Image (cartoon, rainbow, N blue to C red; front, side):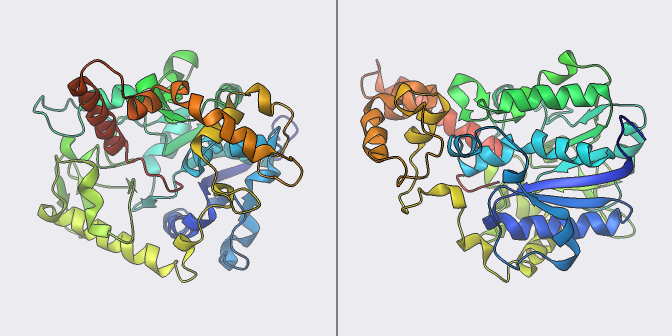
Amino acid sequence: MKDGIEMKHRAFVTIATRNYSHFAFALAESVQRYHPEADFFICFADAPKKDSIPESLKNNSFLASELGIEEWKRFVFQYTPFELSCALKPFAMKHLCDLGYDEIVFLDADMRVLSPLSVVFSRLETSSIVLTPHLIKPYPDDGGRPDEDAFLTAGTFNAGFIAIHRDSVSQEFLTWWMRRLRRECYVDFSGGVFVDQKWLSLVPGLFENVLVLRDPTVNTGHWTLPQFPLSFDEQGRACIDHRPISLFHFSSFNPQSPFQFDHDQDRTALRKEPVLVSLVAEYHEAISRYNTARFHELGCEYDRLIDGTVVRPEWREAIRRRHPLFVSVEDPFNVDSNPGLQMKFASIESSARKWRKDWRFKGATNLRGEKKLKKMERRIKAILHAVGLRKKAA
């Protein structure tokens, strides 16, 4: 027993919108293969398609709306599906702590376990929090994409992987992270904000017993590939730095165009790397196998008002900023219970451009020098590519 809770050993958790269900199911398959001792959970940001959840996961899935987040409808409305999926991470992890698990690993849905995460769990024996950095070696100063500047903006650590041991330090961390993400989990690169991930840069300074896991085999992504060589070992396993990859992050993977996986960077050519070709092909097969219900066509429940009107970014930001016109609106999706709501939303659109720096640059027409504007727009696009951001849910 710990703090009055019966302790369980180990759990993994991911977050998915319903149109990303097949990614979450494929991830579960890989976790259960290499960690049968652990429980795997899916937190659905919106309601999944009825009867779509595999039998092995039906008892281990839950809705984000069940997590007790204050002002739930406003919390959801203020974020895009991508931002929402990021904002829910500490809440989902805290839920598993409350269920009694003492080792909890969060994984993005677009990841795949390729071998046991032994190094992670060995570190959790003595660490409260384990994070993985984007960069372990310097990039050459050659104009390639991404560059090191991109991660000054996107964040030191990749938030697709976070592991904690349930103790006072990790609980303090989750409480802090939940507080930051209640209203500050959005994308504004020019303003120096990138969802949940940018906040992790502060964690080693704010909390004790944080381990930075400098191991390229864990949370290997397109940002890792230029730093270490890829190879196959004698057993045919995919390796990086001559060691088997344990966890690969297929950031921004699109099953409709699987072999464009390398479009987020130009330092590693996918078709010239047999290891990467093999990984992408195997992952595409797994994702496709779980997409029998064509989840990718569903969209996210929170993309529209209840009357079917598509939610505009300016409306989300007005709720996030607690604009005076909307402070009394409990459910911004419900136009029936809020007469005139859409007219109010329309009234703030003309002034919304000034709310975020990204929006100012994209909509500006009176900045001095057209070249200055174009240069900034190119910079924003380069950073977006570097971190694999997409409009669809993560």
